[in-house]
Length: 311
Image (cartoon, rainbow, N blue to C red; front, side):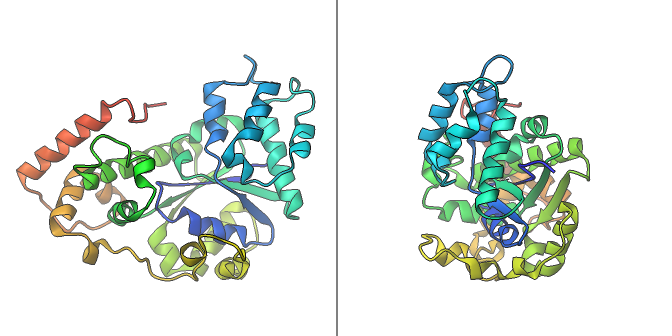
């Protein structure tokens, strides 16, 4: 057993925070805060030697990173893990950080939830060949609704993409497609032993069954504490109102909350993926003008510098 033990990934606004709380409530595993830096820094090579060994510069960068501060680990403890800053590989350092995070919380198994890592599964697999991946997928039309209602969307992608202001629906559709397809492609390369695909809708409708299946994949005994995750809500949690509610039907429902014109545009843009995933379309066929518009948005985005390049 090696940590990170599991990575929870998926398109942002797909319910990964809920899933994190549920898994974290299990008595044997804990999930760290989001850590986009884990695969990114390795890909960049900044603060690493040509052989992938860490340097003092990387440790300094890590300790100053606001996201790493969410791990709430002592500076002295992290510095001690790094040793002299020259004889430890990047993978070994991150493993040691996760081990320490779990030790403080009296749990041996430690995972990470970072939705965007769905696009970097190959990098993570190369660093930790035995790590498991749980890919949460949600109907993209509900994801689009959630993205548009997200206060921080204009500070993050897809809200920073050039087409968001004029056409957030098509932009959200393409962003959802990108993340879902990258995650599924990575899963096919990993195989069923390391990859588990989970639907948000089924998690909400059948939480006990889905959690039992998830525990079997993780090699852990099922514990119904996962269904009572909200009992562990931090007293000072800023997100208590939304993130820590008991399992309830989703607040987002594209059937009643998304105008028909927007549904048609979304389905024109990524209808094939909806079909592949078994999500029924409201528009089995779309108007030619709508399809032409979707094609133009796709061309604009995929050629833009902010669009994630193929790894």
